[in-house]
Length: 337
Length: 173
Image (cartoon, each protein chain N blue to C red):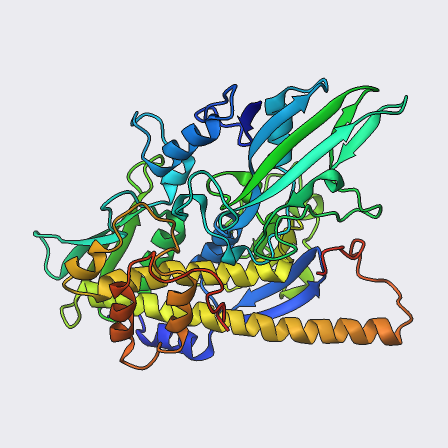
């Protein structure tokens, strides 16, 4: 064999390395090194599409005399970022036993605005009021990150016009609809000097003069004059820029992304490890959300038994209970640390 | 009373009375009756009786298996096939997504016979869980250091150039 089977073990011994260059309430910028591009890209994909958050999913319109159609307003409401802190203790609507929606799988928000003055009235996300039972007192509150604390503009009302509606916010992931995306954007970059020639830069006369260097160009050695192309080189340093939409803090997006990905992998181990298969899997038959069977509690037990040989049996034990038997509420969210 | 869905999807109905909530609910628990209409959540929710992963031994090759992952995409497909290629005793690994509209991933693994393809896959999954775990710990450690450094800067430097951050969020971030 002409490849070194120890490559992976070496990487394992060292493992991925993180260097954070900026972290605040809006974004976190970090460099991930000593990892494969597939490793970094899977994390990026999961952070974009598969972290559960909460967004308005159903709107009941009682009164709408504004110039906008009901559906139009409903769509705008759906896109308003809501605080998703503690969303892991909320159930997916499809996994809940209730008929329609209840406080275990949804947050209710009401909007009632009437323009009584003689000037046009602006209705902002601030005017959405969470009502009824909630799993915690911040989950589902509209995110107000502007200086005045108004939040996004929903609609405008002429004198005499009125809107009165009730919104049901549900848990979901961005793979279903982008309104559930926790990240506004994720920057992902590697090889700022294009040494690997993964990019074929278009140019008028000189690519170097026309393409401004990336902010990370200073972090890596520029190519030497006349340096031969390295055919064995692989990307090794990845620059992430995770920008939050406000519903989850940027560092939570990263850690939740890691958790979701680990749950996916743990689910595979779980199904592959029980050789006979039929007994435990019979329990998991109904339609279910991705992390349901291997969810918070199942997973929390995973990291600790990992490493000692006995983890298979601990999985078998978890599989014996029905997914509805273990209560997902307040399950030990020790997360992945 | 009118009720409308905030999703603005073509395939979810918008109705004129509050029973729409009930109608939508029924739909969201079942697979859509018309196979041409795929609800978005069918991309990641396993239907009745479906298994996340199933193994099928490839008859024409020795120590070779196909693994069919349902309701998954390139996130796991590429990750696993790349790391399987790096794993010891694995001769060949690859993945395909047969059709972009069908959320199924096929991973083929061939080993040299000292481990089964299933064992190789489990080992790789465990290794990846550990690696992501380490990444998470590294990240938390670095984040704590970063925040500590930022605090020191703000306290000592008279609150100079504050890194271009927006107004401090009102959500306690």
